[in-house]
Amino acid sequence: MTDTTAPWTASVTVRPQNPRLVDWLEQALGPEASREVPRAHAELRRSSDSSLELRISARDSGAMRAALNTYLGWIHLALATARAADRPVVDPASSTDLRSA
Image 1: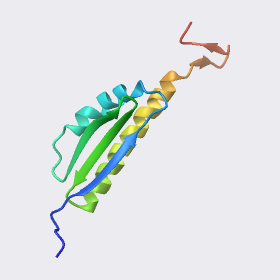
Image 2: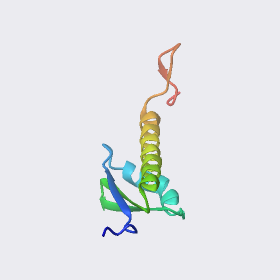
Image 3: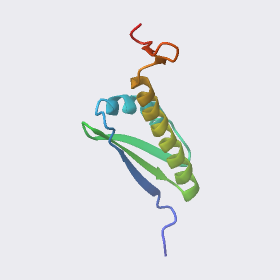
């Protein structure tokens, strides 16, 4: 007989091109991972200086799907925000970088 109480588990490792983003990503996701959620649990772990591992365990497949979708969305948003913040902000009228003006 299969044990129906065994949790679903998933592990996601994020290795951004810029290793400095690992600290920032850990700080951004940390408060969410520490929250109490009834059917799922998330844990962040530094697997190296240049990567962050997210481990999720859930009671059922629906909770796992919801947790994975949520965390993957937050990771995507955080990394996209970092990329956008790293680009020069150019005034289209003068082609001048507005951050240095």
